[in-house]
Image (cartoon, rainbow, N blue to C red; front, side):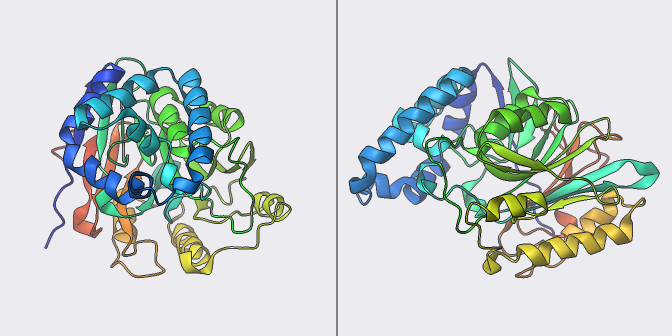
Length: 356
């Protein structure tokens, strides 16, 4: 049996209208997400922390709206469309439910030279599928793109834009590290900025220098340049490519490991199988160096979901792209991810490619 092709939410227009369209289309899902993610704020369970969290929210509101003025309008549009208070819409986009725990699910990202040396990139987003939507956004300012926001947010994460820039994100989970909450910016908002306004890897690296966030990142642009980095609250390590390969799961590697150990990092969380997934991808890349194709990546990412594997029971989406040869095509599979679940989408329109 085949996994159904995912539905893509098409959003277009000025920021307020982008928000209204999402709010109206995803009203029920957004209300459900509020219950799951922000229920403690509504019921008063977190009442003892509300003054502290309110101060944190006000700082983010000032910072984000100063740097991305369009964001306030879009968040308010979501609130209008979904029939919720603007403050709740802000709390969703600012990732308030993970206050003091600044990471998301366990994801995997890779890039390697395929046929003719052209770069193939892909990976997974591992988190509860029911929280997310697939959005193709056509803003009045910036680039069109396709990504996977939690419904009710102005987020982006893993995805690709019309310039052929493909992004892969993996949470940088760092047990023992003290987070500077008065400095951090939600990584999902930085990725939105990258997908909407960056065309090249060089521009992505500029964002890594500009904003303070936590994540492992792999970016590939239409010229075939690959950028791999671990970003940790104002600092980042740019990882050299090994045999032309880049691969990151959820733990720091190389100089990033050393830097974070100085800040209290105690080593990878064994429950996330980050080391095991990194090894699986590395073995696959070594076996397919210089020959990797979309078909072979589909077979790899579509293997039977198993705990501890790249494709696992928590894998919500998998993506594949070849920015040099197909700068507008993103292959997407939704849970359950199988070889027959992948479909090609044009990131400029959000439409499935007929001759995929």
